[in-house]
Image (cartoon, rainbow, N blue to C red; front, side, top):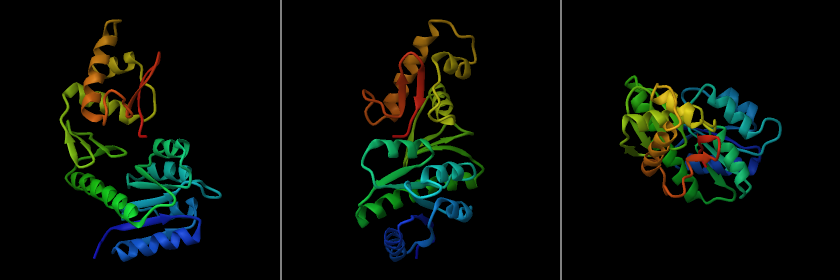
Length: 232
């Protein structure tokens, strides 16, 4: 029997019942909420996953996610009825870890649930040994050690690469100029030539964490402004 606890937040009773029944058959302990406000009342440290609809009356899933993130790193799997990128991007920027587009298959549901629970177990096991993490989607960045995980895979980074990634993830979606990065990571005064130093290390970092370094999706360049970390 599964011991993982999952909170399902969905205003449509038919979809909510379908989700709860499917997860219960798989052996999960399932709690349900009809809206974002009710979900906030049910979030506690015993939860292992939140499945959260984006489009709900009253408090939206986006707002509920932001408030959950203020007190918990529990994985959040968004449900969206839209295939466009706006809802997905907004949800991930708010602190969500993954999303499913309705309609979805039971196989997809269980695959995404298991993936999030597996990643969260790695995070919790480390936490139990006194280690804390910055969490961004499938990325886990240790705050104590030079360790970064992407899903179940540990990524080997140099000290400078680790510190750059940690800085970017610490303020997700914030744009950091090359000067911001250089002065924070190198802890030295910024000179014009320092911009190239930052660019070289960003390029090396992308080669290690991106699915396609030539078309980066995580570390994005905002031309004329700097860099930011985005889960998309």
